[in-house]
View 1 (tube, helix red, strand yellow):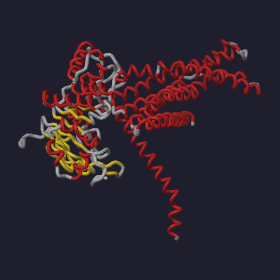
View 2: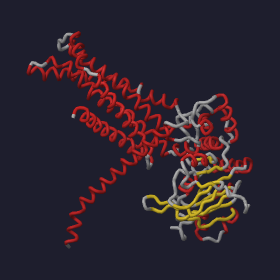
View 3: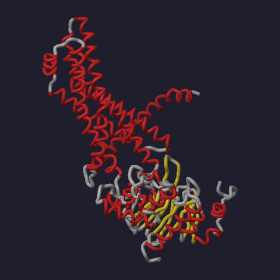
View 4: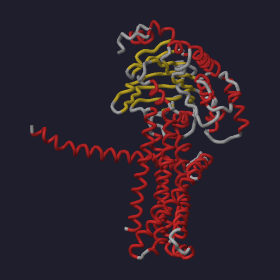
Amino acid sequence: MTEGIAIQIIRPFAAIGAAFISVLATVGRVARFAFVALLRGLTPPYYPARLFAQLMQIGWYSLPVVGLTAIFTGAALAQQTFTAGSRFNATSTVPAIVVLGMVRELGPVLVGLMVAGRVSSAMAAELGTMRVTEQLDALSTLNTDPYRYLISPRLFASVIALPVLVLLANAIGILGGYGISVYKLGFNGVSYLDVTRRFLESSDIAMALVKAGVFGFSIALMGCYNGFHTGGGAAGVGKATTDAVVSAFILILLSNLIITLVAFG
Amino acid sequence: MADSIPKIQLADVAKSFAGRVILDGVNLTIDPGESVAIIGGSGTGKSVTLKCILGLIRPDAGSIRIDGEEMVGASARQADRLRQKFGMLFQGGALFDSMPIWRNVTFGLTRGRVGDSTRLRRIATENLERVGLDSKILNLRPGELSGGMQKRVALARAIAPRPDIIFFDEPTTGLDPIRADVINDLIVSLVDDLGVTALTITHDMASARKIAHRVAMLYQGRIIWHGPRDRLYDSGNPYVNQFVQGRADGPIQ
């Protein structure tokens, strides 16, 4: 009887332990996958055409959605800062808050999330379909390494494309804030840009680029890992796609917090 | 044949997935130029056997030798090298749906890279002719072809790099009897004319009898019977009898 109660008490701890171990095992598998993909991507045969195709897919075709996100966010940020600042005569902080908010946090995070939604899902669905239709196995039997041919180009392209997208998004976001401030809130355009320039430091841009690189890696890694390890037909592809997007979101938000804390903590 | 090195030799190959035993000590020897069919019900480990030989799945125990060289535990480079001896026809074709037919057929030669497209188209045409297809389909996508044509394109893709060994995963499944027999004839001619070693997994008895010199039956992760194709219907083995006659009652549940 007492033994039964003891087991009842232990059970939740056992469940927590099992969950913890399974998380660690997954982290290990993902790390190994990333390591193999990077290592093989650096050794021949290389696939420059595949890298270029992925750069187009991840970078070029994300431009519209990234641009729209940035301009709306920059404009909204300016309006909110103005409204809040007007309560204690601090409306002059608008350019500073817009530039720092965009470059340090909103630019990288929003671009990361938007591209994750576009790209992680597409990668997981494509690779997952290739898995369930045996196209990945077919690659191996045709003397082609699926890591070099499919995974490495996606990882490298994403790490290259995201910093470029974030730089553009930052510029467009600042432009959005400038537009609202000058044409609606009555700021002087020249002094707005002057304040923006004075507050923006190269270390902020460097941090935005580091974040963007990490996010780009997370996006491609989650899309590829979940797609590559799809099992169980059409339902499996659906699950892989969902898992890819959700895990990419979580990784982006978590790594953003860590980088921010390391830089400013 | 006794003194020559077998093309493929499996010894006590075992594999479990999440505690479920799939292969439980498979022993099988295939000589050069021989065509062997493995028959067995769904889920008896036929596909896993093929993928173990190809090095796509690593068995838990046992040895797999290709021309005397060990595949189990081979380095990635060694496995890549051994895999170049193989071509495989996948059950669903597994054609790359993002590429035109000619790129699919020549994929094993280019390893997916861009090449001299005039030369590659010529090679694709030659291999398509080998499987009885016209060069008119060169620029189509796999999705625009019927199931039987997709299988033949997949076969052309598998033979284009001139492999020593070809695996056929349920080559006739999903085809009508006439289309199925076209594929059977192609497999027979590949073995006879090109001298390839063939290993087929199937549960189509007519196909197994036509294309294989020897038949082996896989049941509960073991080869429980093997013999020449003429003995398939008088094997004296109750499991084989039940399977080839397709009866619901018998030792196989």
